[in-house]
Length: 429
Image (cartoon, one colour):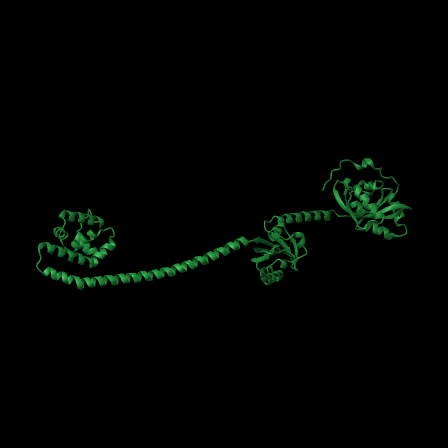
């Protein structure tokens, strides 16, 4: 990462000290009589440097490696020359606190390398002596890669947190021991429970309806042995903060490489209520249909009985007419009568026979638009009577009979057809 510096710190610092054989002098002061110190200095994994009167007096190879400068370029420069401008004030505060014993932990800050790259270092400081005078011994490590990793990790965590928060459903992360380690705001809306009261404090078993717990616990254990041994989708019931029971649809999966699972809940309470109402409605309709079927059966029985009663009545009427009426009509006809009386007797006999005639009943049933007079004339035609004979029997003019014949043909659909009316009546009725 490049960092463009606004001003050149070299303009405000002293020039490097031009001391003859500087490296040899450092060696003699620091490690005279004991080569182990030189070994540590040259091979330490941390950067080591000596600061005296606010200026660098010595730096080991590691310290030089992450600055990009040579020892000659840094010796004699102010120690804060490398520090990122915005971090200088806090570095001085932290260093002073560590030197006075008020701070014991390392502190972090940024430096600007020779190539004007910004790098992160972690530093500790301690009081020492150099060439017999008080000095500061600094130890530092380049933590740029770690900081970059932390930054990427934080960005990743932020990304997943945004996704987790905005997934559109209530979501929670569950630990191996069933503790809820993370929940989103949709979970708050669904259950009414506050995030701060649940995260890392309570288990999911505390909000599940008791009857559903054995099945849920069984899934939880099996899933951590083999993720495929427990269903990913199923329904269960939760109890919200107001004590209300809600139905939820759960989608759950294990987080790879962990014993944690992530669960997504959708509130299906309204859908379940609708389903329940539909089921009750279906049962109600089924009951009504059953009642209707029973009613239809009863009506069919009733109609059958009515038909049987009607048929029985007709048979009785016909039987009575044949047995008690027609014989006396025949006797009257055999007696001497005036021509006028004979006509009336014939009319009476004809009407009686028409009443008991199956033909008349069938004709009236098939052609409901026919009038009683038309049915009577159709019966006469079927018996072979002429228009004049029918006119004499009914005491009407022949033209009146012809009009009835015309209307009868029209209602039977025989107009404009060369079909004999009597033959049609005999054949079709």
